[in-house]
Image (tube, rainbow, N blue to C red; front, side, top):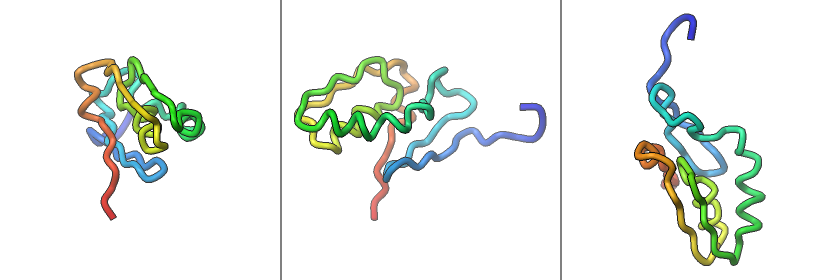
Length: 92
């Protein structure tokens, strides 16, 4: 950043989920915004299947699989900071 200030975190809204992203201290791959287009198709493929999401940071692929009715979802977190950014589903 060349000028101004940057908030320490940012809320990212994605298909009904809200994720808090740590802009200053987040993991090197962080929220993986480039994977946004792949999470929903991945969830459709996961329906009715057991899923293992290894080396995940925020677990969004696994969370999408669980919402899509996977039979079993397990995550292997990639770092201790990962749980800080775990998504939450907003309450109506």
